Image (cartoon, one colour):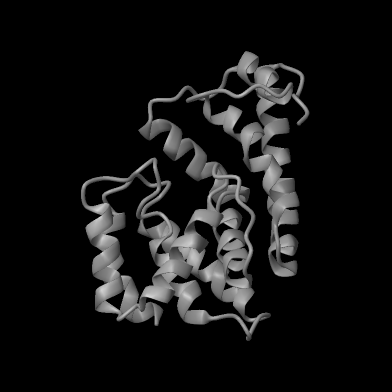
Length: 207
């Protein structure tokens, strides 16, 4: 189904910055496909549609086109009202900031697939791409210390985001395949931060 759905997504997602463009959606789909190999019982149609639509109404990018675009995909692919309800619930559960638990196998797969793309080398690249698009600073040691101590920071630096979210994702994966992938990517982020602190001449902050 992906080959039929993807052409409808390209123009929509390529209006976003490089952290959430069509390349991101393609990577999330590939992650989901790899996880699905271990879960033949999962509903592949629901997973595919949810992957394709999961950032359409993301609060960071939602615009005047979002609702109409979502509905146009539902109409084009004859998505039933029941399927729409399932997909919308699933998408709500994918969000890290929403704090919801993935309750279905399909939600767990899409959540993991999206979170895998938020860590490792690609996660680092996306973090700084997003930070640049939003005019965020690269690094603020005081912010990082505050976040490590439990504070919440709005619109913090790109490095602060590692401590707010990225370093927490490894332990929040649902599926065994995602946990396996996350281990290596997590270690890479830790190594990156160690090198960063070395270059800055500062002591590492521990999450």
